[in-house]
Image (tube, rainbow, N blue to C red):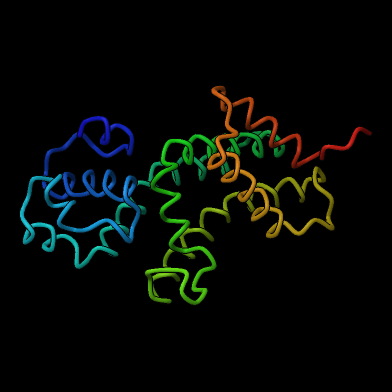
Length: 208
């Protein structure tokens, strides 16, 4: 599972917990949350059921832990962008590029996660309880909040008009990013795609 380990950025460790997470990444990414089974993860991790349940209470906790730990390096990157001294509009493009790189790298797993939490609790739309959905919603809000902080800084310095609702704009920009990834609109040069999205978001498509 070396290629899996490299893909998700886990440390090159052979401890059992790590092996379980790597196996979970592969199974959830290929089969989705609902069809994935703990038994499949156990088999791929080459470990025992007792070992898995020693680390994780159930399948949902395993999935949530995987999402959180996979996101950690990304969170560090986007927090670094937010706190940098770069010009505000440059930050907008940089954070778009970081989002594109992360979601393109983990497209299959994040597609599964977003499928499960779509609507955040709409009846019959998820295998999760409302309490579980709230955890994932909090993750989304924290991540999208990083985009919002960059937009608010740009707004405070006069680069974005005051009437712009930064919260709605951040959610809209996030939606554009994931749509580009999941519809395979991302060019081989992710920087070019980031620039395209930045231009459309900041200046629109009109010929002025």
